[in-house]
Length: 507
Image 1 (cartoon, rainbow, N blue to C red):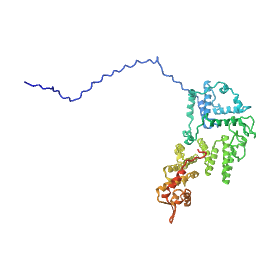
Image 2 (image 1 turned 45 degrees about the horizontal axis):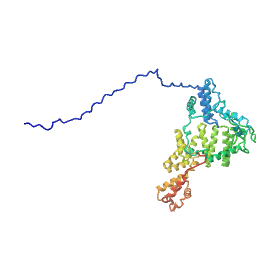
Image 3 (image 1 turned 180 degrees about the horizontal axis):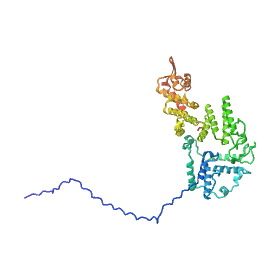
Image 4 (image 1 turned 120 degrees about the vertical axis):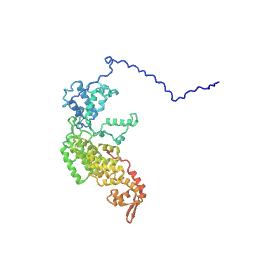
């Protein structure tokens, strides 16, 4: 009898089962096309306004630097320009208006101010303000009621946008001139709130000062002339033309409209400059010369004189101030020269740009230093004075005191006067490094040559002034400086010398 097995043999599986295939994707049918003639949600494009060439030239003349006027800021001029062009566009006179003979916006503002100045004043200012009605204060010059400006009104109108485009096309100033330095930002202070007692006390003090009559002061709006019978300045006639023939005149800060009888004309000012140069070489009296140059600069400003003679006056005054170490007066001249050089009026811009680099080395002002370096052109970097200043800055940044003092002994123009102001602290920094590198001592002659001293006596005197006299060792072969012991003394003196520099009139 045959026996059957207890199991059924199954062939071994050699592959894994494949997963079932995915179901085919049922794509949704595309939506039916929408008739473009039925629904049209696109906004119609606004036609681009084509401005006449005369209008574009008028805007260019308005933003030109030579047409700017003192006392009229750019925002006020732009507002007037927008109003003039808007009125012409609304009245359809853009193509018929004679834009070449139309006064510029700043001239219109000046004429409007002149009309206000010529109005007789019969009451004190506070009486006029007290009798004003609320409606009068909100009414514009054309009799229409003006509204307070809201946030929605800040949106530019098409006229304003077009003027901004025209302004961008004509504005080719250097962007770095508008950059605000860190020192200027740091000097800004917050105005106290109106609810504070200090602010209220200052406000009361100002109110009492204007309410009480001030002896010896005459308002420009007064209908009577001052005691010296000087005529009223007519703003509509442009700048003052001087009539004084005096070569020398003391400097006085103006508190009222200038009298032409006390202002010297350009021809007289040219003679004054030659007279002052001869007197400076002969007498070398800085206080007198500085006062006379400030008076000379004031007469140039009053008459709006900006030419090569103006540049020459500021350059000479800046050099004299550098020679006498008056950085405050030098900074005032340097600031004005920067604006004059931007107008291509001549002078020596590369010389004073080198002074500016050395000045920022002295004040350790890295922010403004970066601005100056960014403004330099490849041609300016090749100028001897600018190249010398850049090499001095690079040597200090790399700690190469040997190269720095070689440059100090060979400084072009009057840059040595600026380097004299910070060479002492750089010598202390070099001595601190020498004390770490050379031990136990070095010859005094080596220090004299490395740090740019004229003689060993001058070097020894400098070390004694910094408290290192006890580290000078007299030997048979000469005097040695014990650098192994003097390192801490030089480090302390170096830290004190590199404290922040704060100078009156800093650029």
